[in-house]
Amino acid sequence: MTLLDLRRRGEYFAFRAFACVIEVLNPRQTKRLACALAWVFVTLLPRSLTRYDIAVDNISKAYGDELTPAQVHEIIHKMWIHLFRMVAEIIQFPRKFRRVNCRDVVVFRNRAVCVQALMTGRPVFLVGGHFGNWEATTATFGEFGIPLGVVARKLDNPYLHHWFQKTRELSGHRLLLKDGGWDGMVDIVQAGGNLALLCDQDAGKRGIFVDFFGRPASTFRSLALMAMEHKAIIVVGYGRRIEDDFDNARWSRFEIGCEEVIDVTQVVAEDEVREITERYSRALERAVRRSPEQYFWVHRRWKTPLPQKGKRSRPNTIPVSSVSSSEETENLSEKSFPSSRAA
Image (tube, rainbow, N blue to C red; front, top):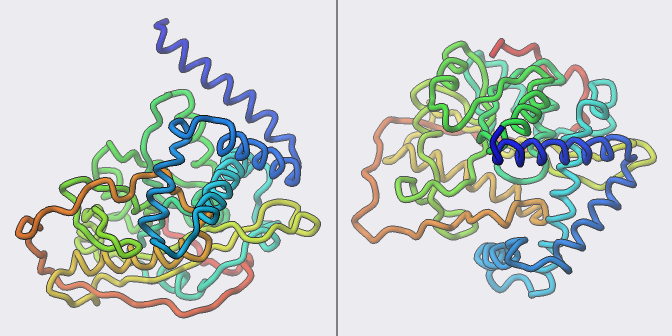
């Protein structure tokens, strides 16, 4: 047994001990613990460890002079409260979240257009970002019999990775690793299944630059290309935390929203890949603006600088299209979703 393996086992046992404590906490206790940990992160720990300055820079880039330094600090503080609560909720999902209490825990905004997309018989890409509790969204779809291929990065610690994989797949999903290539994703799509992806990470120099909060951000073009190749429907959504009601819901509450539906067979533009990428980026931005404290601001979204003029990639000319979703907020019920195609 190597020193690295010993360290990883130690990390895993420490996490499982922490998880045992989290599982027995009630919702109010969980929130108090998250608030205490967030206070430690923002107030006591060195800002270089908590990436505080990165968060300040990102929020300043996104909002400019709209926010005062005090407001920026408040967003970062609430972001950490949200993130600690989200970790606890991931641990608690298998015990706390079931179809029978879904109506108390979840409301679904623009449910009808999402269901309509899922009933077309075509592959659906459920696209979101590091906003809200994205695990709440996938867990909800799993509870209603809609299995997804969930695309995620493999954790460095194999023991932790196995635990998170098992937890995510409890509701019928299949975890697909980003470094595993397109094979698993293509298999699911060709079988008529659906994918869940987060689309707001920096794509480096090879990405396509589209505006996010008014600033060019390198974004992966592979999502648009794959959707066009397989005639998939892109559903841009989110699962944001809403006001707590521990007396009635007895757990956290979420609004799962369908922000926009993009039918790639209907988009007509000089550069279809850019058009699709811009549309889902704008949709994600609209969602984040509703609850900016629930976005993962410590991620370097604008890490890659915009290349010099004349060095942008040539436009792709395959025709594609999009359908915007209408406004509607409904309670989620067991009749909300049809039976899913097997992924």
